[in-house]
Length: 111
Length: 113
Image (cartoon, rainbow over all chains, first blue to last red; front, side, top):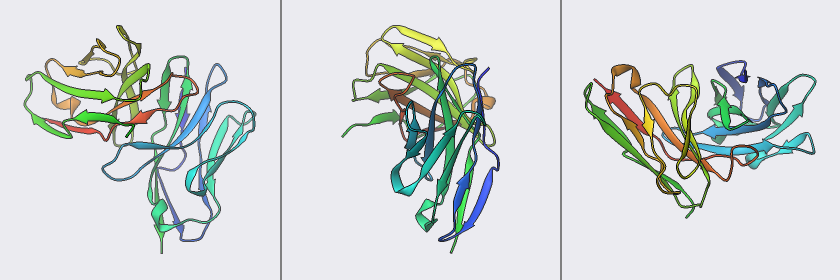
């Protein structure tokens, strides 16, 4: 069975501090991995994706994620948080014909 | 503009009254799917469609129906809504279910009383 675990339903960081949002997955086959962001009253927007190739993936708005097969992880990072980063973040995997999402992490940025 | 359009954005209804939430995409995507978002549970897939006339159940299909008669449209049907179907619903589409990311609509907030 496929599953996605996001550690920490709420994360608070100071403006300018490092953002680290954790995602672990379980999959019976090599997955495709995604991070999405959701702003209030909006749908989800793609931040970045890992399919094959380089394990360090760069996305929009300065975010990046590293695929670590041995740890079954795909953590999202950003070196310096901005107020506009406050949102809900979802990790997702695509396996066979379906997408599986984590339960989300709400990021608060403290001025 | 490339987009996934859902209607309505908000819907309040009563138990047992059939309703349809429409979804349309203009990106010529093969793959379309429906999700419900509930606090603490994230997004869960209800149904998906690989192509016209091809649909399959996701993780939480009970109480829902879908149809894919045209490539661009993928309506979600609740034949007899119940209060436990109160949720935020998202339609999404992509070129395929593997390495192609999903494009999401803006959601439909459904309340069943």
